[in-house]
Image (cartoon, rainbow, N blue to C red; front, side, top):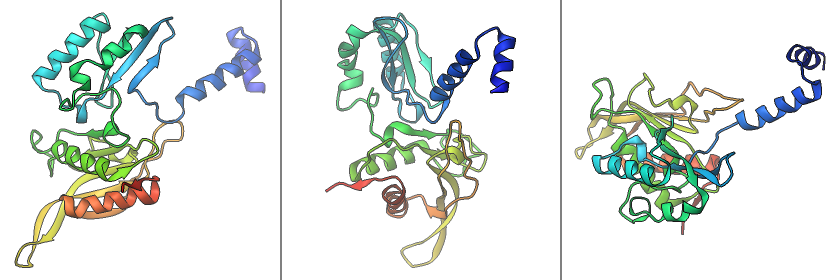
Length: 249
């Protein structure tokens, strides 16, 4: 109470107003804020729209499409998020359904969407071995395939953040993810039963962001081969046992 009163006196505002401001501040800074989909702006009749870009990778055609959507709906303004997605601000609320129906956001073969799944919509990946000489494994292609399989097999009641990084430099920030996959050495038996070195991952579970952020510095699983038959069952077990996922019938 004394601190609030002193600071309020310095700022020249009533202590009660100051405390109310602190409560409001804590309300929006706590936890993970979902930026995808449609969100009200302070300006009357305006919304901002978050568009999911799988693992942050855009083709030339998709770049053209996003630019065209921005010209049509957000006055040519585009913003990018740290989670590798796109925001269109200042969209007229009356135009939301028209935007949602745009072919690049609604067609079955489109990669971009306003409302992705609870798993695929919250995946982050570093560049990976395709373009990074430091990475131990390829990340973007692998995590897209894995999350598609997870979406097919599991139903989740809430969003889960999965991050993948190609090496211990952790550009993909696996330590703050709900589930983090870090490129690592692994071994797997070949057709003759001989153990051979293969691309693999260490799996981190339980990181978090927000006011009560927590780094998960030690992996829960080490040296899991980066194959669907080896890694997918591990991820399914984590999601069902720790995040409330249910296997689809």
